[in-house]
Figure (spheres, rainbow, N blue to C red):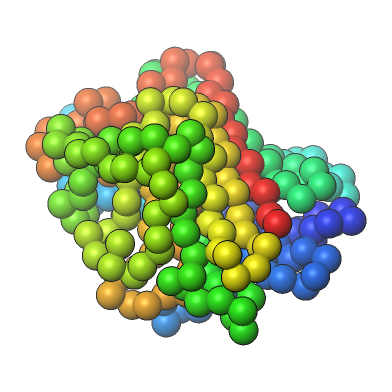
Length: 291
């Protein structure tokens, strides 16, 4: 387990999956969901090389059929530490014989966590080390304890506040696939009250069109909350398992999307896929502020 520390936060990251597992502030408040398997046995998995589900959990590439489970395999692979200080760490996953059984490409995936006062920045770097163009998706899935202070507030005391406060297009899910051709408008001009019923159709997915957005989980009951900012993601998912009344919410910047209901199953045709030319690099990042 890797630990990053400054005067404001203590952060823990597991080399398995390069997964953020704990963020504790100087008041001893734990912000990250602690992976209670009764609800959801993860903290903040990295989604790579797909986001969401494939139709029938498989895709076709170069005349072959490959199987891959939801959100890909990075979250279940060991990453190597390639650089580390007291407040930053970079971890790397390289393609190998096992990854190529599911994803036939040579790649390097580096994830950098950087602690800065009350914030944690997460950076992704994907390099196509092969000779063919590489289609891929990537995303984050951090879960935050809601409520943060259990004796002061409950789940439904929290709101979701978005900046800019405007209307967003919401991508419906026809579980487990997406339906990006039939978006509808979601009014986020005012804070959205958190309820478990909000997630009865699975994740709430916002189209961002690559514009900067900040999403905050906050309550009038106290001054503690979380703000996630991302500048260049096409989608943001908001999720809590339903009908379980789980005491956490995930805020998920995505550079990709679950297969649409009308997919042809070919990886290179996948909706919202990124296409990375040989020897080229893709970068993305987001930040979380804990207050």
